[in-house]
Every structure is written in structure tokens, then in C-alpha cells.
Amino acid sequence: MSPENNSDVGGKGPRNGIFSQAYSRRLFFILAVLVVAGLSVRWALVPKSFGEKGHYRALAPLEEMARKPLLQGKKVCAKCHADEFTRHEKDIHVHVQCEDCHGDGSAHVKAREAGLDPEQAPMFRELQQANCLACHRRLAARPKLFPTIDVKEHFRKVRVKDPATRCQECHNPHEPLALDQRVSKARIHPLIHPCKDCHHEKDIAKKPLPEGHVVTFTCKDCHADIVADFSKKPHAQFDCRTCHLFHKDSEFSGRIFKNGNPKFCLMCHLDRPFKDGDRIPLLESFDAHLDDVAEDDGDRAKRCVDCHLDEMIHSVKGGIGGMVSTPEESE
Amino acid sequence: MKKREEARLIHDADSIASITGRRAFLKAGAAGAAGILFTFKLQDLLGKEGAAYDPKGHWWGFMVDLTKCIGCGACVRACKAENNVPDGYFRTWVERYTFLEGGDVKVDSPDGAFNGFSSDPPYDPNLIEKSFFVPKLCNHCAKAPCVQVCPVGASYISEDGVVLVDHKHCIGCGYCIQACPYGSRFLSPEGYADKCTLCYHRITKGLDTACVQACPVGARAFGNLDDPDSSIRKMLGKSRYGVLKADLGTEPKCYYIGLDQEVR
Image (tube, rainbow over the protein chains, first blue to last red):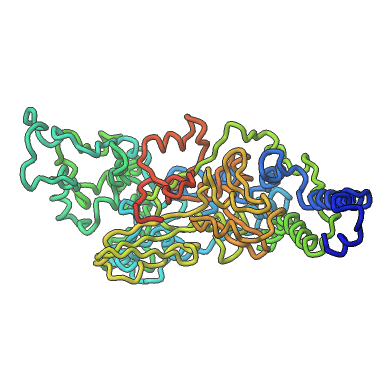
């Protein structure tokens, strides 16, 4: 209240001034305006459904929910591309989604559903080394059990002359390993070998570990005969893992699959222009090879390893206590 | 390509229009605009699948197995495609930790690992003690600091435990971006705060999140933490896991298997 106001009311005394009708009416009016203004600002600023479920607009999560998914998932692709899908499902890339390599498929599927030519919305199909190397380039940070390569080293090993050779020349991304499923299921192998796997002495597990005894096992610790024999064979430069998948260290019993599929051998041994024919025996085709060597229909059904295992790769006759079996037994 | 672009534009047109509407309203102070903005019909918003989903009984959590991650960047690419995340912004990204002899720890994430990692970091390979990839995303904290600081209630935790941003209500002040200790939020070029939604539009329809679906090695997983039979509960039950910055008390729900203490 200003001093002038005080002097105006003069004789009536200071108490009357505040509660006079004019003042209370004005006060009420100001309050009413404030309340109305407040309410209308609130009405304008606070959206509908705000606060119904919490300190947010209750419709917001529903709006978020209503968005349409874009990525399709491989089951949608399988509806039209059954061939590729079946092969893909059987091989090691089974967990790699179609869209990981081919890109978002929503437009492609939409075109198909609208009866348009799906080629109007083609999928990504660039077969470049870089695309495979996004996963398979050797990097210090990659898990050791994941298959990675250094391109130069790999090409040197498999005798590829042209450094620009695309991975797809040998590896079909839909079935990169051409796994032989018949054998794959037959071999369940303990990762952490109990002592008795290698030692037949009684109570061996209770004895102290001798000095220099391996703790981390490598292939040769249990498969000494095979590894020794293998080192003399033409494939000696390859790691066991080239054909056998390691036990996984996250499992107690790891699976070992074996590639008995001719497709797998032909990745290297099929005659292609970029391969160094002087240093690697090349076949014109598997059928042509069978024409040359097969004596009857039974021979024609054989896999590469049925004839070439001992001769070219390694002997399977060694091994310890039934851990190693011939392919016939394991099937 | 063009078709794809169109599809995205159509699906985003609604939200963009309302955001520009909101900005206009704030500038002009016109009260009427708000009424138009929020006249939604519930049924229009809900798809058939959306109506079937009940948030009650769900409490979503995420899991990353660092021992499996190969740093290919498939998750980053899938997330960008699914959510139309603008270039240079990331709802999820992959970091590479490199431990050098002598105790130095280097972290890099070229372009958020959108194209994966094209080479080893530029250090002498003999000096690298250990190295691994760490995918990062919103931790969907149960006590999310980003939600607490939002002055308008645009950041919220949904009933089923997903931290979301109401793009239409967000004023783009950026407090939440400052508050998030994990750097999971960004101010989108359209002016609102944006972040991982845990693919709320997918998980509520029974689909996997884009990144989980895309991961070729199964390093990512998500699931209902309330359901003792869910795969995430079972996997967590038999794994040794950790969370990022547990000491901040944000109660993150993104669990890392094989987490190193140096990872922040």
C-alpha cells in the first residue's frame, strides 16, 4: 500500500482501508482473473490424458506402440524365397537375419503385397569383401572362437592369386560351410575332459597334477596320433578348425561338426580362374571327377572324405579310447 | 530406394506435423492450437495388436553378452533403419575398449560402429593386453534421472518399465540429455529429445527389438523381467552379469554379461 493511499482514507483509520468494499471487490476480481488465466493456461499447456497413469500423457505410449515395424525378419522372406531360406537354415549362418546383409526389406515386401514387381524395390546385393569382413575381419577385439581372417593370409593359404577375389566365389553366404548335417549331430564331445579320458590308472583324479601338464587343452593333447599324422599330410598348413568346429568354451560338452560335404572341399578344389592351379589340385567339377573314378553307383554316392580321408587329410585310425571314430561309425 | 524413403516419410509425417504445430503454439501463445493437437481417437492410435497388449505383468529388461559381441555393427544399422535415426545420431552404438600395456584404456567407436570396425586401433599389437566390444543403448533405468528432470513430463517410464519420450510434448530443453549418465539421449534435428524406445512398437506386438533381431551372434537379448520363465530371466539366472555405473543408483535394467570394471 502506497503512502498516498493512506492519506486518502484519512479519518476512517488504517484498518478500514484494507477491508473496504472497493478493495475487496478489486482483490476478488484480480484473484478471479488469475485463477481463470491459470486454468486456461493449464488447459492449453497440459495435454489431454496427462496424469491419468503418471506424470505423462497416457496416450503417448499408445502412440509409440502404434508405429509400424519396418524390419521384417527372415520368416517373412521365407514365404517367397524358400530355396535360399532352407539352405540358410541348415548352415552356420542360421542366426544371421536376411536383412543383416540385404538391408531393410519393408519396401520390397510392400511392393510384393501391392502386386507390384518386387524388383521395383530391390534388396541390397553388393557382393564385396567388405560386407563379409564387417563380421569376419580379424580384429584384436573379436572373440577368439569366432571365425575371423586376415585376407592376405587367407588368400596365401588357399592359393588365391587375385587379391580382389570376392568371398562369394568360394563361400555361398547362404551356406558358408556347407555343413554335412548327418555327421554333425553324431559327435558330442566333452569339453572339460575328465582325467580318465586320457588316463586309465585308478583314482587318477585324486593325484596331484605333474609339472608341465597341460591345463588348457589343445587338439593334440587328446588326439596326438591324428595331429602327428596330419602334420605330414598335404593339408598340414590348415588348422583343425578349418574342418572341425571347436568345442565352445561356454558349453560343458561342445559339438564338433565335420564337413563331409563335397561342396566344402570344392570351395578350394574346384577349378576357378583366380586360383593358383600349380599349387592346388583342381577339379573341373565333382561330377566329372566321379566320371573318371567311380566304378559303380555306390561309388557315385560317396563323399570326398570317403576316399580321400587317410590319403590326403589325416588318418582316423589313431585316437584314444573310442573318442575318435571313423565317419561310418559316427553316422 | 525411393519407395523405402516414402514409406518412412508417411510413417513419420504425423509426428513431425504435430511437433511443428507445438512450436508454433509456444511462440504465438495461441491456446486453441493445443486443443487441435490432442484430439486423438484412441482407436485410431491402436492397431489390432496394440489393443491385445497389456502392459501390466510386463517389466522389460535388456541383456548384452559381451563375450559374444563381434562388433559388426548390424545392431546399429538395424536400429537406424527401423527407427529412422538421423545421420550422426545413435540410439544404440558399439564401443571398442582397448587395454594397453601400462594401464591405458582407449575407447573408440568410429561412426557409432555403423559400418563396424574396419581395422585394429592404431597401437602396436604387442602392446594390446585385451580388447573387446561393448554395445551401448538406453539402460531403461528403474529410477531414471532423465525422467526426474523433465520440466514438462515428456520423459516418462511406461507402466511396463520402458523409458520413453513423448515427442509431441517435449519442448527440447535438453535437461534429460544432461541428466543421463550413460549418454543415451540426443536432441534430434527436429527439436525433441530422442532415445532408444526398446522398439516399443515391436515388443508390444510380440516381435524382437530391431537390434536383437539383427544380432548375428545372439549377443543381445531382451525380455520380461517379471516373468520367471522368460528367456532373459533364465539367462541372467545362470550368468555372471553387471550393470553400468551401479553406484549412481539409477537401477539400470540393461544387464551386461562379462562386464569389465573399466567399462563406464
